[in-house]
Image (cartoon, rainbow, N blue to C red):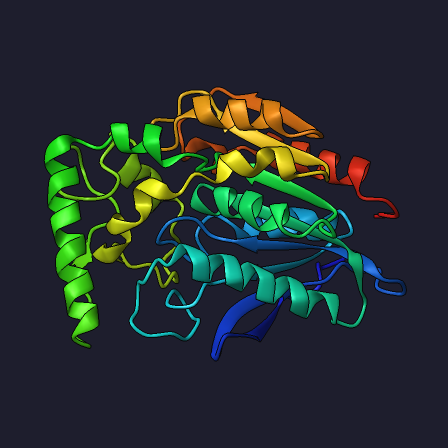
Length: 298
C-alpha cells in the first residue's frame, strides 16, 4: 500500500509563515505522537531530512518538517538570516501549532534536530518540560571547539563581514552575505575537506538551498553553547554523535550527553555528513522513539 502523501502547510510565527511538510501515519483513528523537525545551518527542509520524516511516519508518528523564517519556502526578509533566538521561537511556534492539531497528542511531541538544529532542540526542550523526547544528531553543542576549527584568516574576515552586515542592517540596507560552505582555503563558514561535497550530496535538485548566510551571525556565534543546557533536559534524549566529525567536534557533545539525566549516546564512525545516508541511524532513532514514547502501535 502506498504511503500517505505529505501535506504542504503554513504555520504562523511572529508575523511570518513557516513552510512545512506534514506527514501523517496511515492509522489515524486515534491521537498520535508527533516529531517536529528542522534543518541545520543554512539548509532547508528538503536537504537530507525527508527520509527521516518518512521513517518516523512509517513507525506511527506524525511529522512536521519545517523551514525557519528567512529560509527555503518560508517567508521573512532579509533572506538567509540566521537568527538563533528566532529559530528557537520558530520551533516553539511549530510545537504550539502541533499541540492544537487534530489527531495529534499534545503531550507526545518529540523534538528532532541535526547539526545546528541539533543544538537548537536542546535549548528549546530545556525550557519546555512537556516535550516527550528529543533526538539530537551530529549536534552543534558548543561554539568554542567549532570555532577552533575555523582558520584564523577566515575568522577575522568573517567577523569583519559580520560588522559590515550589522551596519548595513542598521541602515536598512540588504545584508552582506557570506558563503556557508566552501573548499579548504576559501572564505566560508565551513571549509573542512568534507564540508562542501558532504553538504551538496544531501541537497536535491528541487531544493531552495542557497550557499550563503547573513554575516551578522558571526557577531553572536561564539556565545552559542546549547550543550550547557543538557542537565535541564528531564525527558528521554538520544544523542547521535559522529566520531570523525570536524564540523561539530564530538567532544563537547559527548560531555553534554553525560550531563543529561536521561540521555542515551550512540556513536557512529562517520564525518559530519555521512550520517544522513545510513539507514541504520534512522532505525536506531525509530527504536528509541518506540521505547520512550508510549502508545505507538505501528
